[in-house]
Length: 212
Image 1 (cartoon, one colour):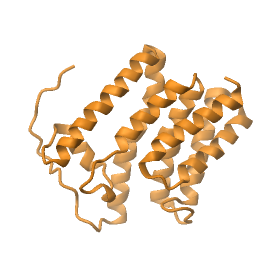
Image 2 (cartoon, one colour):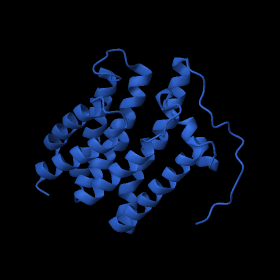
Image 3 (tube, one colour):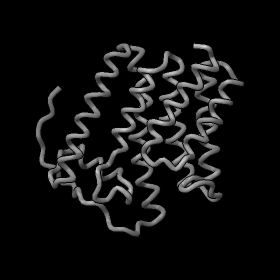
Image 4 (tube, one colour):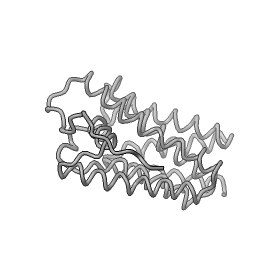
């Protein structure tokens, strides 16, 4: 598929420091809505197979990487650069935004290392556990745990992974253990590397617990 070159009208500079809580929540909504699209991966893998899905993810990572290097050097790449800026955090200002890269790599590692349903649960933990935790923590978080982590967000992560685990495996006890470990991994202050640590850890634990 080829995309026709366009000249974007979106300002690709980062917004000024000092955004309000509401503005921060709006940015988080956009960021995590895009983040949770990774939940499509298990469905794509089921329909097309693991190899084509890996190819799609690999191409996506390469295309994004090229576009992001151009953006930080002052050259917008259409909607990719516009979405990157829209979904970026203040800490990303002036830097390569690595989140989409680690997200794609995390999903690829899950598919490469583990069989279904472990690989699929690993991706769902990444999509929903991490995504919902961030949204709930941003909107309702009051009790601080580790840096950038709240009790409310961690509880949301645990519930999201637990429900995903039960839906995929039907094993309530194993799903609870997996959810607890996923919550701990998600809470660690690893920045964008949680996109890799979380699915790899969840996939490994699921494989061991279910004897896959």
